[in-house]
Amino acid sequence: MKFRSFRLLLASTAIAAVIHHSQRSVAADAHVTFTGEKTAWHGFDRFDFLMDEAALTVQPIKASPDEGNGINGEVPGQLRCVVVAPKDAAPGKPWSWRGRYFNHEPQAEIELLKRGFHIGFIQSDAAKPWDAWYTFLTEKHGLSQKPAFIGMSGGGRNAFTWATTNPDKVSCIYADNPLITRESLMRLGELVQRDVPLLHICGSLDPLTGNHTLPVESIYQQLGGRISVMIKDGAGHHPHSLRDPTLIADFIVRSCSPASRDSPAFAGKEFTRSSFYGVENSYRNFPTEETYITCRGPLFSDSYDRYQFKPDGTTGTVSVIAPQRTAPGKPWLLRADSVTRDAVVDLALLDKGFHIVTAPRPRDPNVTVLQEWNAAYKFLIDQGFSTKPVMEGAGRAAGEVYAWAIANPDKVSCIYGENPVLRSNMFKTQPLDDLAPLAKAGVQLFHVCGSLDPWLESQTRVAEKRYRELGGQITVIIKEGERHYPLAPKELQPVVDFIINRVAADRP
Image 1 (tube, rainbow, N blue to C red):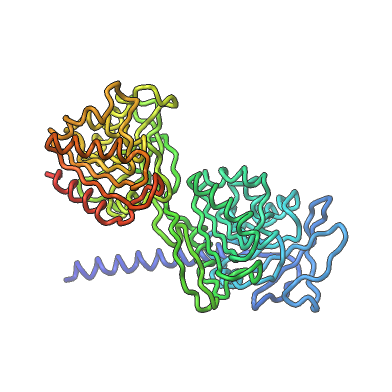
Image 2 (image 1 turned 60 degrees about the horizontal axis):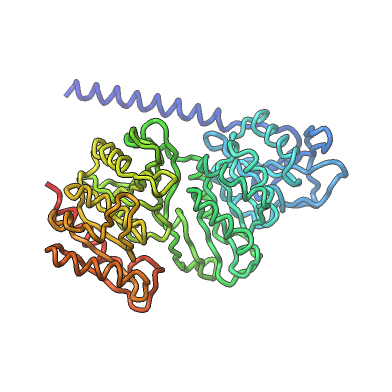
């Protein structure tokens, strides 16, 4: 008992020491001093400055009483700058940066102040004064090297202009009915490479939504970046923000304190990581906003890491989308074509713990890829992946997975095709004329086709007849009235159940 009490005493002392050290560190970290006479901004200390546009020097001033929480006066050749300090700064001294419309719909910034953020503002378009303001706040006053940007309307253009020019100096962007320049659109990849998350809040009736936010969303998604979009039904350009800013503040706080992600062993030392998530909309009631909001993106759905790398023995790149939790046996799905954002079957399987793999391909589609697929397969099973992947393909890509499966029938769990065309560049003999190895190995097939698809009769109907004559099992679901697109099944569950049951049957 005495020994146990002594251990408890030691543990308590150690905990107390850690807490004391942590409190001292936080207290030291929280101390930020600004010169000049302070005023008040929504209950917090406000410090005002003037920046000389030519010399880029910063001098403290005192806001005049008639300005209240806003800014009224301007001095020729001088730029108004403001810092608002929290009661206690959060660790790392995070801050948000706005470049236009100080004190307009400030509820998100007020919430951030309560959470220990500083608030920075400069009344200028993004250019050299922004560089000087950033240096003033980070080097002279020790604020975080990666501020969060808040950009409303033209302020969004400023935020994207500076952030895409300085991608290593930004943690996230919250843009509200923003504008963006063509130059910034072309540089969005710089933010994607650094995993900078975006949040756009827009009105469904604001013309900027279609001309600015939707292009940003499309480009950012395709490049593998994380962008969440909220479209307020029936709203125009105004009002900006949300009456309840909790969601916005949560997004910014999480973005400024990103969780560390260890790369999986299969990615090796040289890889590119991006994000993959669906594009499905959810129409949600926001009573405080007195409207419904269409929501989509990683804030509202699961997001997965996608790794691209080159295993030994391949010249093409392998792409692996990893589930958040791997299912027993490490099942995976192998396909020839890229995974699109509306690939509902793949998204459902990711949720079930499957890895989604795009096999390597050289740029010339007529070059044989059998050896590279074999090398990728060996590499992945050596990393613990199941020895029998599920094969999936749509259109002509289905012919490629069929060809590899026919060459390796004992290494296939099942094959799923969406409006498949059983033609391949891998062999001279086409898959439609060489189904016997699959039937002999007991590989089950599942096709989903549109009744008006031009390939239905010459491909799936012929494959269905021949495979059954060979003793194989094939399931065909016809979507009445549909053509080649959309590819996805109308009813998802039968496909997912088929794949999961086949994988379960293959497990030891």
